[in-house]
Image 1 (cartoon, rainbow, N blue to C red):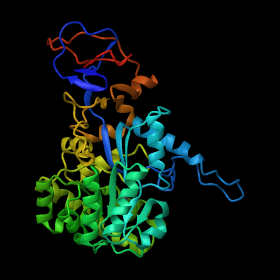
Image 2: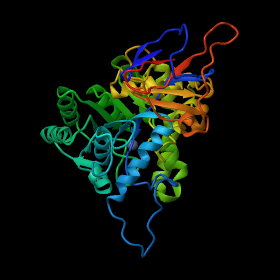
Image 3: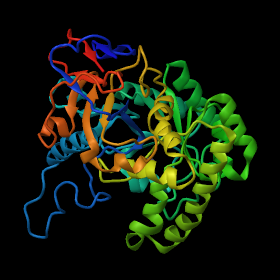
Image 4: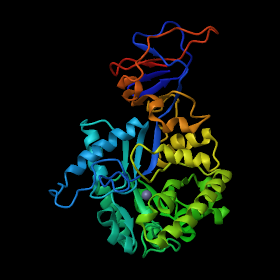
Length: 415
Ligand SMILES: [Zn+2]
């Protein structure tokens, strides 16, 4: 395989002597970098025990707002060390993900590709009081259009919209559609006309139906869809991607249950069962699935992939969801595959994730993480597994795959 200028230029069997600087992969698995299609990139680590600074104690000096940006920097590194080379942020406070994306663009630090929604477009609703700057409330088609335009002005890569209420807000009922058809249509039309995709938060069936009928590009959560197979068929036919976010239901029903209102915990337990039913039904209907962790801490994202496999996907199907499926959610056909013309966002893994997805959950199995063909993380870089010198081929005459680590962009990488 050859990589030029961060792009996979060729995939073919290596012949002849390996180029200078080549490293034998010694039977490791080469695969696309992981893509998390549903993340909240935020410096608020309350949902990420053990990550970031501990909460301030009474009497300590107030923590400056700007400290949060250092947490974001830690987050960026955590994603890469976990093999997550692309992240879709579906809502954060104070445009933090856009700030982080800016820092990446300036070369201030390494991180995954970051796709931002700006603020979540929602009808005026109780969630607006809880989520503050994460939301942009709007009502009526023209205000919806304005809300979309504001996100584009802000720097959004795509639009996130609440087609139903949220399971994490006591005074929101996630069952009915929270927006009217006219409002949702205005959001989709405005976003699509300007070339942006639309991700719809959809828990109850009516909101999911409206979102699918009005042509959104991804359904987030979508747990009710098993109740109406015709909607899953429509998604499969229309290329609408489902991001099941199983972990978030586990979080509310189990992990963070003591911190939530009991009614929400009971609701989440029901939703958890439904989410798994929908995962299976969507798979059977041929819906493209994507991996969305929707939880913390950053870097534990593979837990969602493992849950999708526990929920009935084969390990290989889970890996495809976490790579090509998530790339489809992003609308980025240049990501998520090892093929000519695709971006060289790659993982070199000890073990075979296509047979056992749990291999990816242990970061020490990630031997090398490449972004745009550049080594950004992995045991080979940290010295835990020093790069071995090139060995030419094994007894059966098949050359071992080898990797020439990029010294400069002009140097091809050969696997
Ligand atoms: Zn979410």
